[in-house]
Length: 61
Image (cartoon, rainbow, N blue to C red):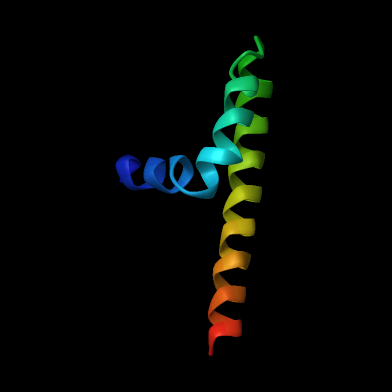
């Protein structure tokens, strides 16, 4: 399952949006803050990607 989740975040928009931000987040020394920011960022990215997919389906129909 982790393979598929990684595929979502590291291909397409994730490669240009999420991956550079993740590199900056990984430089944070506090583990708990880094995990919280990472979860928030992944959730926001997922919502944005889902919104774009829905809008693409809506406008193509």
